Length: 100
Image 1 (tube, rainbow, N blue to C red):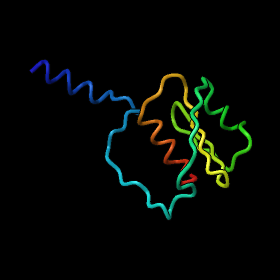
Image 2 (image 1 turned 90 degrees about the horizontal axis):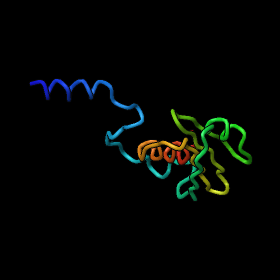
Image 3 (image 1 turned 180 degrees about the vertical axis):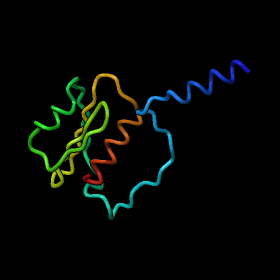
């Protein structure tokens, strides 16, 4: 019983960057960038980096990272702090492809 209680307490302290819920990929017709070229930059000041990056058509931020994009060039640049998750990278990529 003690073991079960420990497991339950761990789940209430879950890391918000770990998101393993299933989702449906957005329809290609609803994406602003359908097949992007993707770059990944690691920077401890990720959000500031995205705000200052040029050229860009837009950017979005999440905890521990951000993404900016160029629609005509079909380019997404993911920027994360040195410690990140696969889930974070996936969320940033989807934000870029949807342009929001």
